[in-house]
Structures are given as C-alpha cells and as structure tokens.
Amino acid sequence: MAQTLSDQLDIILNTFERNVPHVQATAIVSTDGLVIASRLPDKVEEDRIGAMGAAILSISSRSGDELNRGDMERVLIEGKSGFLLLHSIGADAILVSLAEKDVRLGMLFYECKKCINQLSEIL
Amino acid sequence: MPDIKQIVLERDLNPYHSFFASFFGGLGELGMLNQGSINIVSKRAADYLYAYLDAKEILPDMNAVPGDTSAEVIKNLILYVNKILSLVGEYDLKEAEQDQVVLLISGDTCRICPKGVGGASVKGTLCPIPSLLEGLINKLAQKEMVKLITSGIEKEGSTCKAYYQVLN
Image 1 (cartoon, chains in turn blue, orange):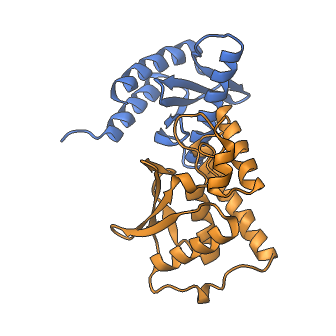
Image 2 (cartoon, chains in turn brown, purple):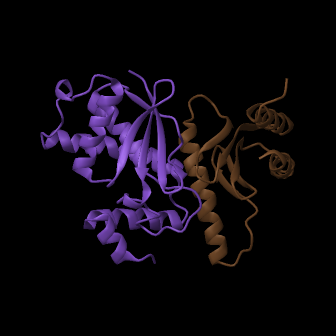
C-alpha cells in the first residue's frame, strides 16, 4: 500500500531523531504557523510551537534582510536546558527541532540539512 | 497603501475596524503574526469578549435562541455576534456534509481583514474570524458546539470559507 504524505514525513522525522543523539522532538510547520507533522511530547501544545516557530523564523529572516546578513541559514536558540533549532524547508515550511544541551551541534546541523533535502523533495 | 477611502466607504468601516485591521496587518508584515498565532489569540479574545458581553448583560438567552437544528442555532449565534462586532457585511452559513457547516464570507465586505482592509502584503491568510467565532459560539453555548476544521480561512475567488464540525 502506498505511504501517505503523513507517513513519509513521520519516517523522515523519526530517522532524523534516531541519527542524532539528544534530539528530543521535531515538527514540520507551515510558514503560516500551522503544524504539518510533529513528533512532540504530549505535554507540548503543538499549535503554539507551530505559530511561534514560524513567527521566530519570519522575524529572524526579516531582521537578517534589514541588516544585510544575506539569506538566513538557521535560527538557533540556546537555553540552559537545551536548544531550539529552526530551519526553512523551501519557501513554505519549517523544520523545528528540540535538542538537549549535550547534543553535538555539528552533527545536528549536518543531519538537519540531510533531513531538509529529503523533506524538500516531498513537500 | 490600498485605496482607503473606497474601502472605508464601501465596507462601512468604523475607526476600530480600521485600527485593528491595519494593526494586525502591520504585525503580519513584520512576521510577528501568522495564521497559526491568529488562531490562538482569537480564541483568547473570544474569552474576553464573552466576559465583556456578560459584564454588559447582553449575553443571549440560549433557551431563546431560535433554531430547530444545531446548524440553525449556530447561524443565529453568528448573527448575534456579527450584530455586536460588525465583522462582515455579507455572509452565510450553510450545512455541509457529515455534521459540518461552512461559513461563507463575501471577502470584499469583510471589515477586519488584515490584508483586504489592513493592507498586509503577506503570503497566506491572517483571518481572525473562524477561530474567534469558534471560541465565542462555544462560550455562548456553554458547551463544545463547534470545532473549526479548516486551519483558518480558505479563499475561493472573493469568497472566504471556514468549515466547522457540529459537535452537538
């Protein structure tokens, strides 16, 4: 039986999480701030993650434009307990990742890129 | 900037319409507001509006709201909300398949559109009406009466559509 888009997205996110130790959760949201797919903990309100993730990325991108920083690569927010990483997936979607403090950032960025390439092909 | 005079006169705007539409439109243009965040804050606004209506003692008596079916009651609640907030000029609520209703708004009569009235030049939609109505109808009915199915508003030509599941 053919996989649905939702299944395909879930597989890609699952693989990404397995490949990078200390990644805790992932989501794909539209630039409208609406959740497309997610692997977030139950207690997390995914509607809020979607809306805020899209807003953060959008504001960051516009700030970068205003300050002549060129096309934005990613947004990384570092907290005492871990990281929030946001990447554009083309013009219409965003990859949101949550990682623990112990994550290797190089590995995280590398696997994010691989994941985004895969997602770009199906979104 | 759009032709403000034409919009004000044709859509019969009051100053609050103009303020909120342009305010939200500006936040949208800065990237601070998207449909997802509008959906969240509109439900919050519904709670405050309900409290306002309660304080003013103008809440409808749910036992007196006419309608033999849930869809008819919802239609009358939207009529009540629109009379107070004057959100849109022309609209309709129709029954759709499987316990669903669809709200059809004539887009060029909407008075609070952050794009059409507030001039926001953004991709996608920034419509507060579907989730505002969802929140207000459920508060007024004192039960989960409707659930918004669409993630905001769907544009079809000049018509804006929002689908709701009728729960009971």
